[in-house]
Image: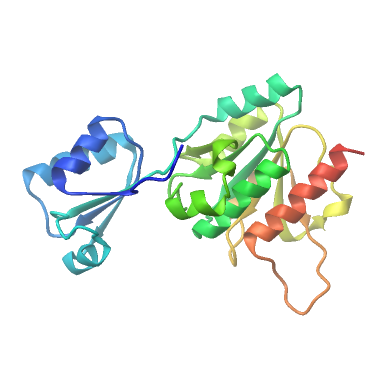
Length: 246
């Protein structure tokens, strides 16, 4: 899978992308456009569960690469999304307990790409991201992952909390990165595990944190109190690796 153009401009092009089954992460619509073709695109977006943002014509003009956006620009996924069940099946085929990353509100594509790269190197079976309030599989994510997207599946889900509940029924335990949690060396993270990483600054949302079985804190010795989200994901992922190899 190679890189490609990740924005689709023009009413016909966007509508055909939907009808062809293309994965659209976000749809940008000029806020005063209400004619028939635009309404058709909005209906397709609703059926696909696409996040729709209404913006000014000036904003679309700034985003446009062609100057012919006709009031709509779609942001398409660089890579095809996987299903969560594909990840569980991969773990089973390898004879390993599932190890998944779940990301709550990661909006920086460099962070997402770096986390996918770490997930691959740590032997995780996949990464799960939410549909809304998070970056998708953009070209920047693909580049930052340094090829890991070719090997590590990424699933996009509508409801991260519900996904956690469903995975618990399949035997997974969940640990959430949290500065106020238990020191990571004192948390048993062996077995089927889901590692939850929240956004920088806010961390994981309250509901997501409540769904987790454990919280784990990375010991801090310096003068600042937080790590970049992708760095925190790496530190905790390799604590899981260490415990699994004990």
